[in-house]
Length: 153
Image 1: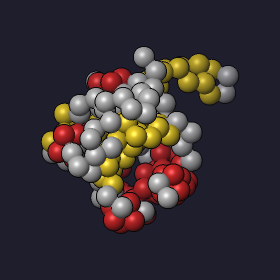
Image 2: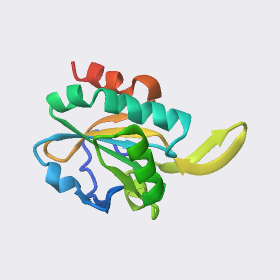
Image 3: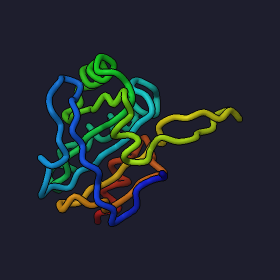
Image 4: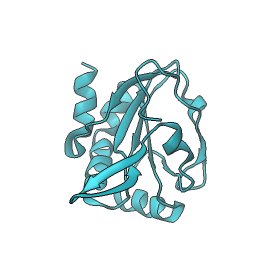
């Protein structure tokens, strides 16, 4: 399928977060949503990215952004990840990969010359009207919030 493009309508999300609470993209109508997909909780790059978004949470919130994280980790892994690093935003445990595939972020990856399928680290910013406004497919894990904020100057 490939990544979504700017202007595409964001696929609906109806899921549970790490605490079992409902997360529906429609609830965020009128707000910009940072929807970030990461390969695996508690790994160095994913931790750096999620913590960077946490550290800039107030600044991003003040600019009208809501944040949602998604990976294929199970609910227990997502909850442990969230509790360990005190994330103020929901993490979706997408073990069935429905949201991941709807957003086109499941694909072929390479590491150490080996090919395998996995989550392509990607962030979408969804507009107040529910359309893809920005696509970050070259995420800078340690400075991702700054990367987003710079794009919205």
